[in-house]
Image (tube, rainbow over all chains, first blue to last red; front, side, top):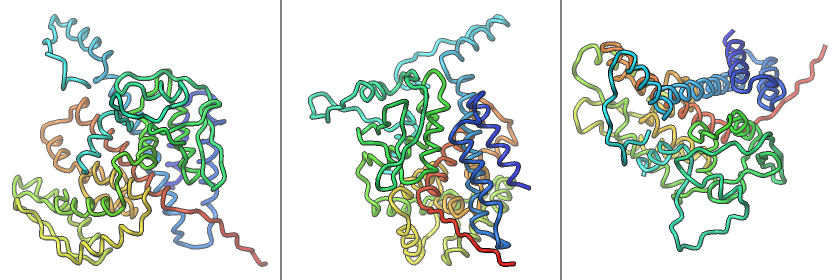
Length: 107
Length: 288
């Protein structure tokens, strides 16, 4: 069931973001409550259920994309990254070219 | 106008505008306020432990960082109309580690824009801008070669075009010349009326999504839940994906851009949905 996958995905993201004690956050309780609420429905094609599932998928996308974007940012585009890349180039005896810097070179 | 908003959101992920010296600036009462958005470039240290939300009269929700209430860059009290959005914003603040990275807090940025409205946009202006965007919509612009890309565009973009033409009963069409498609007036009128039904907050979010995806059609497809966020982003980046298939993927550029686009679009879509919905629980009594 798609909903189960999405629910677990969101909870996993929350756990990664918060560390221990994630079960006591507002967002954890809210997500679980929402998923439980939309489980029972009398209609066969419940519009609210479809809408809630789409919203859940969007939120999962939001959480995972921000995390991965931040990860890549720190890896490649932050000042720390320059140091790392310098060291990597140094391993094979190369040096990075000097960039002019200043306006337009902010990451 | 849309380009300005794009630059706005892209630059620092946070709505800031510098107050020039000598102007009458509303006195920001707390050190917290001045310090929070003091500099656009340096990151701030995390100055709170707990994040919570509280409800006030009028059904609005506020965010509390420790004991202090969150405020917008413009100095207004940060209030959101529903609980789900409040919890999501609180989570964004909650997951920050030692430094505050404002460029990851997309929902907060959107709320700030909606609350402060720094560029003084009206609903009319936003709707006109969105309709203007239709003339340069990504989906409407087809290439004639290379054949692989032509085929990809036909297979992926045509269904979306058909869907939206059917759903809204309009004629849009696509073109492969530099002039672009000729959008008939009735189409614009239909969309104008549809967009009028959204409130100001939802329109702010929708404008944001349109600028990110560079397409009104894809944005409407996403908001109407015909497409998921990942699908909409993929369709928006179709040509890039095609080039990646030919030439390979570069993580620090392609993936970086894709994740950023996905994050922003997802935030925008969530913002629109949360600002325009209202939940109600109907209990049915089961009879034996």
